[in-house]
Image: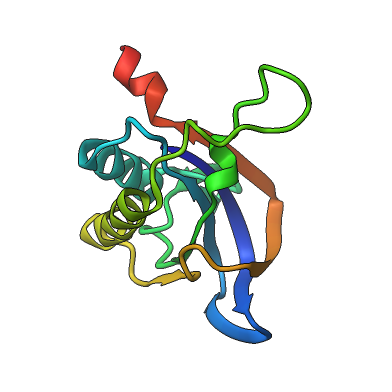
Length: 152
């Protein structure tokens, strides 16, 4: 799984001109599900994100997690994170999981965020054309890939 995690002051997602997910301070997570990803990847990644210390403490040091500050997560499925651009200039999306499996792992990932103490998880609509508004705070943006943890 690949994730782009952004600390935000607010974030929202629209489908067909209607807001379907919205958070105030917390994390915006763009999630790509790869063909070889498993429930274990979702569980590990959700735990890492829930405990990722990128919120500032009273000393203005990034030392607190989204769960520590009572923040929310807006989770957006984004298969384009799985793009392979080794050949040519047109991305290939063959590394991404088939839609049915990707949706199940995306939903499982979101439930794992809750299990790891995130107070509220809002989502986009899997497979839809979405308009995402992200008010990045800092800016703080972290890229995560579970393939790295599988190699160690």
